[in-house]
Length: 594
Image 1 (cartoon, helix red, strand yellow):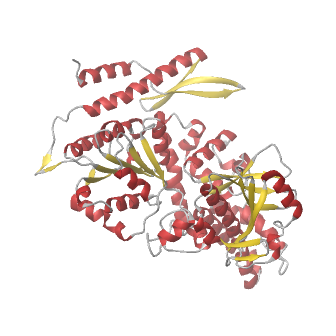
Image 2: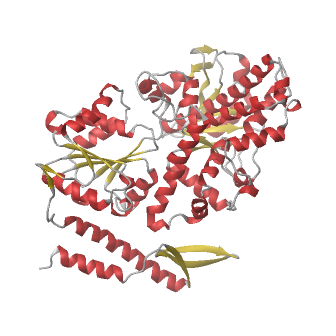
Image 3: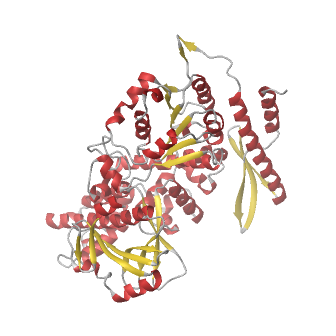
């Protein structure tokens, strides 16, 4: 009878005979060429393959990956030969919290309000499901560790005594974690929470050990981390169909108010997106309180998230077209550029055209057409000098400063990863008359990230010497108008995004006409009815706000295409009221009711 050692030796021998690396494809002069690429002695190597050979090599690489997974499981099944001890306690290789140390760790969370998604994790912990793990993932500062602490505080004494929290560090290996998991299993621990597990270098490839061995043995395992893409890659690969996932990145307004204890759409616009706002019920300070902390968040929570995942997935073979950005450290600059312009057009020109602030341009036009106090700010400032100053403040590279030429393939891949991180969401834009080409408005799910860049614009504008020629009253009027313009567009996006996420059984979109638009339409295809909305960043109600909603031609065309209109609403910051057939809805009440 063959032992585990015999099987491991056989697998290692088979693996050694199979190729490492991956197959890449490049378009050269309109022809697709395939290359075998791998890393050897720290150096990247590449070899051209014809189509037939490439197919064979790809199959052999896939076979190697299957055997490597099998090998990791077999090694994990090896009996523990010895256990080092310090006094009467077992010596773990990772940072383990149990008993009194665990009690001290979770104490802080007892006084904090919990997010509604905690119930999903509690249902998993209370279920009889085996062979599955629970994955808690999302960007930094979105409440993952607090959710774990709150789940543990809800345990009774018997459950708590069987609970362990493992804090992973970058130095930890899958082998070290596996060593500790064997000890914990033998000692009868049932509830295991592993935080920042994606810091383990070979986690993506070896994650199946948690479900196939330990969850199958009766352990309830929660894996948590900020490396969202790493979890998505592992769930599509080694943990396929053996995990339940909970994403924490999107924090809607109702949670912002209820959990943080702070109300007001403007506060949500300024700070929304993380659970790190100083308030009644939660953490100490806002990540988005200034440009410097926002930059640090973009770099660590988003850019490095993408880089880390791609580095360890398929031996860094999944970078695809973004490899040059990774190697030359320009990914953060590209993401900053995308976030600044995300409300307008996500096209190739957004990334490669010389930077121009859209916020400034739109606000300048509106100020010029102000009925009560028209002002042409471009008569008083050096537009070129201002734009250059703002560009540097936002750390955005112009085309001639970029060492990597940004192409359409780069744009597509960056957008894919931002979508996977739940940072961006596309809202459809329909038109009447109908056009064949579908368009979208891309919204950012963390409004504070977007608004911090708007504040950077204001600070740069205030530094402009020519701007000082305005009276102090005019300067305040201009700056307030710019920020209110930005808040208005952001409020519109927030309503669209949250409505779309809440009403999955209906279609939510903007509707544009030849002249004018409805800010939001909710279309019920089952009952063939529609609701039409205007969204205004105003506390006052006046007829001009709903002129499109009562336009007979627009309503007739809408009903022809999207069914009978059953509701006409203006969402604004004032009190709920009615003006004939028009409903006025308070934006905070609307968002909390979704």
